[in-house]
Length: 546
Image 1 (cartoon, rainbow, N blue to C red):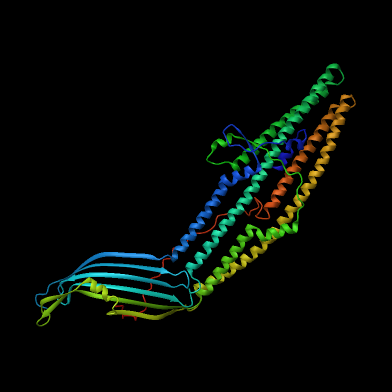
Image 2 (image 1 turned 90 degrees about the vertical axis):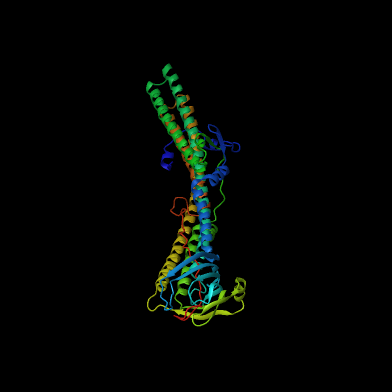
């Protein structure tokens, strides 16, 4: 309900008397029943059931999952493969009677690899085994059994040593998790403020229905008095018509007041109801708490200091600055030469069934010597067939690099974040000072409206006595009642505005005022999967790894 609409509703009765009606604690909701609702209960229901809060609460859970996603870049990765292959080649040997070569392999490989969370290094370890059979006359073993174990390590010395893609992503997702928690707290503050304002608005509109009803009763009383006076000839019929017209006007105001109160009840109900309980629409809410009579004096300087030190939107803006600093650090590091220490070691084992030949080439098989798989495994650590490498790889872009462009963009974003914080601080100070002035001015309005109502009540009392004594007219009595109604409505609005001002004053010290554009928003993008590299050591081109 808008303020203008609220103040067009008029009536008669004591506003303070209506607002100070006492009640009892809240009850469980039942369709068709009445819930006596305290402000605390309304806030609790909103925090538990408000769908907007549920959305932001789920965003915190999603941010937690993103942190886990980004952290998975440092999880060891297990891999294994098992397979069999067969190949047949056409005859190509110069030996008489040589046919095609058939080769069959049965092989397996198992390993681990990991990106380290510190230092940017990566390591891998693997074990492989194979059994090969062939009818080639050139092979000394048939079948051949091979096994090998390999470890490798790659360590960046400049670029990627202090920070890399994976660590940037992990740091920012953790910061985004903190940001989502801040956004949730901000949303709670804003939702609580909205619920409190809706509660007091409903309370005021409900009170205004009573005011309207009493105003109508006064008008109907005046009609009865005029009917009696017209009947005995003490008043002209026009006075009766005027009184009856006033009754019709005040009945219309009562209908409007009842509709406005129901709208306010639905608005409060929507904010606090459980979406899973559709029967809550049929429950009548009875707001039983009373407004605070006197508010504590506002300390503007203290409130400004509290807001600058604790506002959630300022904390979120600071996180954006921290993210920009992290990106600058990352791109500064990425501009360095990519110098990596590479090291690897492989121990191999070889065996199987060795064919013993005699005679000229290729000879005749006269026997066999068996080297079992256990002996082959033993060779892995005996350094019979070691292969190792150690070296340094260096790469550096010539000319403008992607990292330099990224650094320039990150520096601009940092400047934007700094200016955003400065601008936001000015807005925070302005909003807190404005909210404090509203508390003070509405408190003064309450005092002025209360005095105005007292004078209006005295005028109605005097005018009514004069009318009963035949010294006044229906018009003057009606006008006095209208002035009293307006004074009571003005006081009702002043009380409502004062409650809203205190709610806003409390809220703006922690969050942007509801509806000011600083509300809750969802953030965070998808996490990019970053599998660990597979260091293999460094070898001469064409030399191969044996």
